[in-house]
Amino acid sequence: QVQLVESGGGLVQAGGSLRLSCQASGRPLSWYAMGWFRQFPGKEREFVGANTWNGGSTQYRDSVKGRFTISRDNAKNTLYLQMSILRPEDTAVYFCAASRNKGRIDVGEYEYKYWGQGTQVTVSS
Image (cartoon, rainbow, N blue to C red):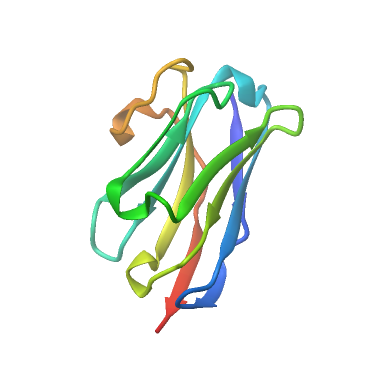
């Protein structure tokens, strides 16, 4: 099975940028569609965005469109989430996740079998 480890979280001022990385090991990243989710305190995880196995198709939740960009480097087994124009309401724990439906984008977390441990993103106002 694939193991996922996120990195790149931290504290940033509103309007700033961060890039999260998700390093995959154990299986090729190209075997999976990959998603980013986030979780606010006391809330369920929500879909942020995802892309298909070769990055050919990408989808985002409306509130991050134009600000967040998902990309992947399958040769490096790494998924990225470039976050710009960050807002305090983006503060959350961010998770990457792998779905075996490699050619399809799923927004439901139940479609994703493998998860990283999460990385905290805090945006100050």
